[in-house]
Image 1 (cartoon, rainbow, N blue to C red):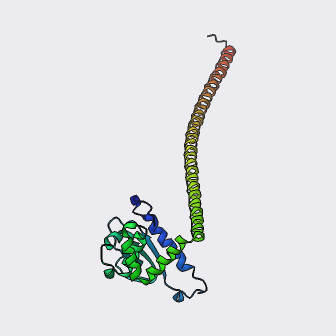
Image 2 (cartoon, rainbow, N blue to C red):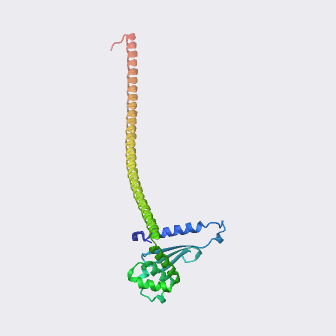
Image 3 (cartoon, helix red, strand yellow):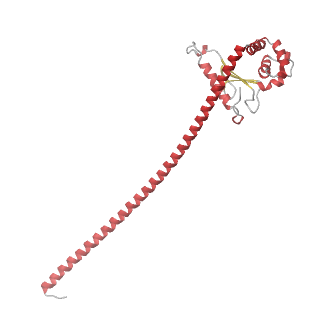
Length: 247
């Protein structure tokens, strides 16, 4: 299986393995809800790369465990098989290869002419691999099977291409949406700033109007005082006139 990216430590393939395994285990038909009757589920991943940058064994099994290693159960297991060991294993005599080592060499190097003699020896020694090899040869020798295989491969490639285009289009649309959202946020911030300025101006106008009202009240008070003084002066003048007093 092709790796996703060393930059993220092949995170996608690990998450994908968990997703497929959980989906496989939880969709066992005809078993009701008696969980103890569920069959064990295995997600086997053949990798032509190292999933973990700090190294890994030829076969690694992952189940549900605590940080200390205590197993919750073995109902679901992810198995990673590292095909990068194939060339090193191929140096061993076939009779010293384990079954899994033989399969790793077959899967990884079966199409490489440099290892045809090793593959032939493995095929003679391992019955299961011989059956698999005969199936592959029958497909490659039959025009009908080759045509079907080629048609399916083209269909898969076309679908992958369409999905890639759709992903790129979606990513572009999401990027545009993000840019528009950022612009909208900037406009909203500007509107908020302008609203704040308007509120400050309104407050200032209100303060000035209050000051004007205070001054008008003071002017009215002064006018009233002047009117009172004028009335008093008029009364005094009348009294002086009555008394025959002159100024």
